[in-house]
Image (spheres, rainbow, N blue to C red):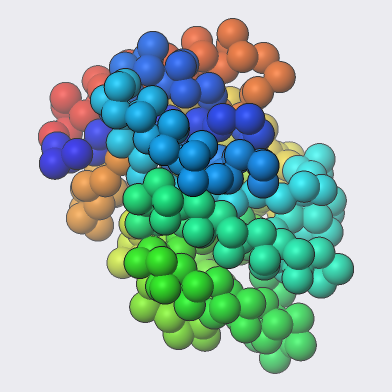
Length: 281
């Protein structure tokens, strides 16, 4: 893990959008981010078994991502209504679950917990905004007790709004998992310009690609294989170098319904990133 920019992949055990652990191993990647498994799997015994599997494969776990039952990314309005800790009707149960996920990450010896917080309201004076600030502080404080940082994944807010939110939360263990494709998918800003702005807070990243939608911010963009979209990965990596980011390059390809294509495209992404690393490092 001392080498700059180890390749990674977003993986899952029994739930979520990531590739299976065996696929990560077959592709030869040295790091993974893990989509938190379902509640019944989040036990000490399962954690020990999982750590043995990782050790046997020579893979390092770099982050555990929370996700929740009932979330849907069908379109932008549905995402706003269902994702993360913003929706009031599911917030209490999800806050409890996020703390449990943090506890499971501690069993795995993982110092990073991450999630999509949801669509943070633009109006900082709004009651909902203040509620989301409060619940984020609560999660940060629980993570601190477990020796962890909390990473918020980019996408649903502009860079400026995200910086304002982090400032308002006032917790020094709150950072960013930067996903350039999400800025394009949600139409929230040019990802390279955003990366320059939020750079000091970027502690983990995704390598995912997308094309702009016809009506950015109202209609989804389109996620595509790495190198086929509008991110511009050589510029992305050059910018990561410029802001001093040296951590894992974690590939995410969200087509779990087509595992054969998913594996092929993640494999292609590994090759593309290795080429760019050879050129830039």
